Image 1 (tube, rainbow, N blue to C red):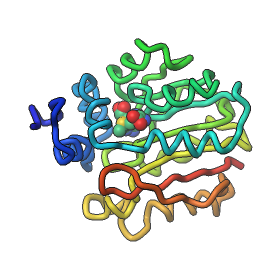
Image 2: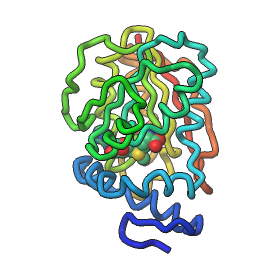
Image 3: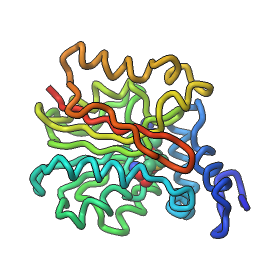
Length: 228
Ligand SMILES: C[S@@+](CC[C@H](N)C(=O)[O-])C[C@H]1O[C@@H](n2cnc3c(N)ncnc32)[C@H](O)[C@@H]1O
């Protein structure tokens, strides 16, 4: 049973868990969204687990196939409580920074000592990250591109902090599944924004987009881009 707008009980049904995840997905300012995550930090991981959310697992599975050096400098955007780092560290990758707009989600990751640096910032909406150009070799993201979270307007800033030749990899719900909620995901607009950056020579597809089972009854996609 749901306990509150963003609450969830241990014995929640799968539908409650899906509803929990969807409760964060709204067409609103990212500041409000990250505040909702801060308020739900104690139940976030349980909610993702109950919904059998595979975003983090599939992002890391795709990343590990690239076989990049374990010392490579990685940034996790929308790191939350550290789901991606928890999966990456056992494979030897420990040089990872976390960026998230939610202070409490980042604090939870910090309590577990999962990242090197914890950078509190909204990404996109014109925010400039406190990070120099050409800093990272790899960028990983799961469950961050969606309505009310981070949009394609963030692409130039994401690319700016990446070294040329760096890999950006992310998993997201299939964009068309948000079509009813947001015009930014309607009629292939999200994919068109990815291609616009290809046309501009900012990045290219390192691997073709891969369709994945994302979470209960929802299709997802993994994008793997190489920064030019
Ligand atoms: C669904 S959670 C994903 C967390 C983690 N990547 C995972 O797989 O468990 C989304 C995270 O992105 C953060 N977030 C959402 N929109 C953001 C934005 N525009 N800038 C920075 N962080 C954002 C939220 O605070 C939250 O921690």
